Image (cartoon, rainbow, N blue to C red; front, side):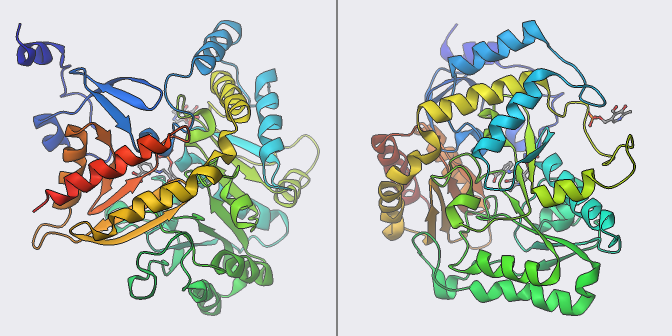
Length: 443
Ligand code: PXG
Ligand code: PLP
């Protein structure tokens, strides 16, 4: 068989799988399959190496094919493959919660397990309502999100989310949104946190004035907006949100599904920015992305208000998933935390951040580039849309990069970069130089 015939023979039937967040017809006409992975690299079904510039989907922070995780998963499967956590327990879920509590921001050490970021968000929103109700303020049900926010795809998450395509088809819960912080006029090409825009946190005061604080349960934001194209918070912004929430008895939720587990060079963005929320949602890198899992980190105050309320013997929080604290996911998570600890990965970005910043901002003079933003080991690069064809340049960059052996993420005309935390300076150079070539070839 020649190469083309071989590929065809190895290509699976594509019809049955309805692909998520994908142009299904376009993809199936020209499929792109990643067949295996090791370290910093994927390998395609036709045998080409692809440098992972995105940690999968922001999740494989320790790199691919980690043998210690595979061994731990195998061992757990043969020890206890599944057991419920409703009115029952198993040892490893308590061990994993304890291990997470040790790396958590001070005070956020009560851990509720979920299976994804979307579930973590819905769980946190429900915790916020339950907290207020337990304190006799059950009328606090309104949620506040932010424009351009991404909080997953559950009905709770899309209600507080701020991306129109994820919302327009569906009904949403009562929620208001403060403005996003992307300010091209004042902050274009900012390095790290932009200087201008802390005042946009004051939008929350306006919403409070409109509805009354006593109707509002929580404010949720990503400390750094990820999906919208990497938008670091302006200097002083998160502090201001925290102060306004405190003044009005509103809970603050940080959605750390992307920023958690070392992406900014600290355990969580909460540590990095020195602003502590009441609830913190996580997923993705909690198991290095290898098994689905998420967790909500709750403050003692939130946990205790709910768990101490109600009579003895009554279930305090009517919420949970069949797979909350799945033993095999816990095993993967514990092995992941051990790798992070042993290899210093949760703080490694601190050493790399300057090289990263210099490298990505080196693209400022490439054609079509209108803005570059970076923080930790994340970057967003905006391209001017081709007139009449928004998103075309972004998609062509994705394809062109893949052709040249690098995986990046494109949403619209924004390119997002977030390589595994094990990336080398040479590999950073390769990602950026390849990007320069591909962008330079765009029409
Ligand atoms: N919150 C945040 C901040 C996220 O980034 C979720 C919640 C939802 O997590 P799950 O596990 O339900 O997908 C996310 C997920 C992208 C991209 O390309 C980002 C996510 C997922 C898929 C693609 O930006 N983030
Ligand atoms: N639908 C049905 C019919 C169920 O029985 C259950 C769980 O028992 C669910 C949905 C929820 O599934 P999960 O707990 O995996 O979220």
